[in-house]
Amino acid sequence: MLTTIATIKSLFFNGRLFLFMTNTIALSQEASGLSLGKPLETMREPGEIYLAGTKGDWNVRCVTGNPGEDDRCEIQQLLFINDNNPIADISIFKLPAGEIAVAAANVMVPLETLLTKKFRFSFSEESKKEFPFSFCNKNGCLVRMGLLEEDIEAMKKGSSSEIAITHISSPETAINLSLSLDGFTAAFDIIEPF
Image 1 (cartoon, helix red, strand yellow):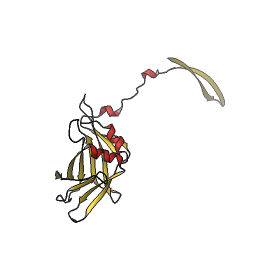
Image 2 (cartoon, rainbow, N blue to C red; image 1 turned 90 degrees about the vertical axis):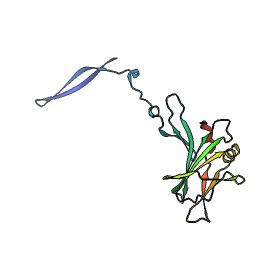
Image 3 (cartoon, rainbow, N blue to C red; image 1 turned 30 degrees about the horizontal axis):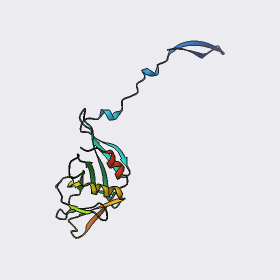
Image 4 (cartoon, rainbow, N blue to C red; image 1 turned 45 degrees about the vertical axis):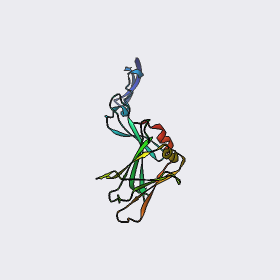
């Protein structure tokens, strides 16, 4: 599309000001010719981890799938001691239909956790379980839990759960950590089994 633009120019010559007008032809670009950009999330590589959002105190964390595959998502939360020091990390993901457990949880706790004392998880006041540690590596010690339908339902109804670990320096004293359930239902319900 062509547009004519009138421009007033000035010239100062021998103490006199001269004004003159010029016409300039300008090209106007059509909106259809503009780049609308490409969303960055479509540019992730397979296997790349990204934060898909948050629900209350829970993060929805996903791994980019191969072309044609869905991304695999889990919900995750850091647990803190003394308000600012992260001490444990829990991630929960759904299992395919037909399994005894409807979901699984991985909990990473620090090295120097006393492994002979079982990991304890309170889903509610009435539902408390203990689980063995699976293994330790340079990042910490891992607990792998299968969660039954009633475990998930107890978490959906509560406002917090509690986990307990024991440090090797104090074998008689448990360290109790509070797991917030704010946003748990919303976060759990949006992820798909894998």
